[in-house]
Length: 344
Image 1 (spheres, helix red, strand yellow):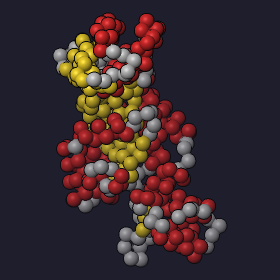
Image 2 (image 1 turned 60 degrees about the vertical axis):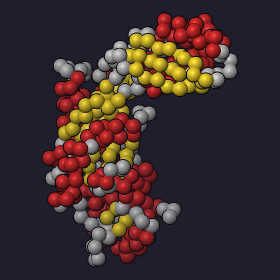
Image 3 (image 1 turned 90 degrees about the vertical axis):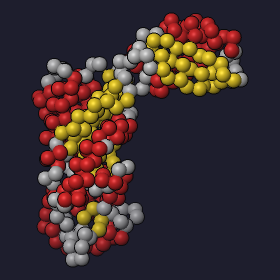
Image 4 (image 1 turned 180 degrees about the vertical axis):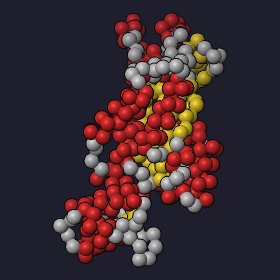
């Protein structure tokens, strides 16, 4: 269904009203609350059309309507105007609470950030601190295994070994692998993922101009596959707050949320680390989430980084009836602050 201006206006108002009150919304309520220049009958007709399009539904006969997952998706993607004032307000709140720089330990800092994010949004806050950001290369080697293929073997400073099968470009012969190995170990040993993010080695490739593209691709593989951070500790705050929401008055829903955070914490951390890649805020709504207990929830997330290296992720989890504008602004502000404050 292509929404006309009236449909968009009515959908926006219905979602907004339901988020604010947690009560099904009727045409009379919209007419009174938003002073539309429309009759109740016109509003009711628009709501009927939105229901037929799958954007609204009635939880039971004779009740008002509430948004479906699709209705929330249209609201977030098309009707929710970004508010720089709200983002700035969240930035100021984060700065006031967390300060201008990292104090004490990273763990205590991220715990404080999670508590603040939960307080700002009324949701469960999740902040991840990945491991492996400081892992460095101890030794690496390219070993020919078949025609046109080499095995990249990398040993890190914690004595872990990773190997990847790579294509050997036609312009690089097996006889040239030994000088390439010497070159790589000379220039890449003792380097961490953080070092790769601010790579200043472009002049080095000129020494081996014929292999420059191959060397650049190797560095990218090492950065993305070998030294890529994995989820470490996940800091969670605000469970008691979100469980006071009307959606969790049912014992089954409550148990599912508690179980999710207890049993799937690392998977949730991995999800928000993946979703927030690219320094953008991502919103998963209802059934878009991969875990069944999350199908009545929405997840808003973004990563934080330093010099291009992803250090962790920030997310909030709450019922689909969450204040998306505030959640998005809070996640964005918190991720920005952590990016400028956490130096690993």
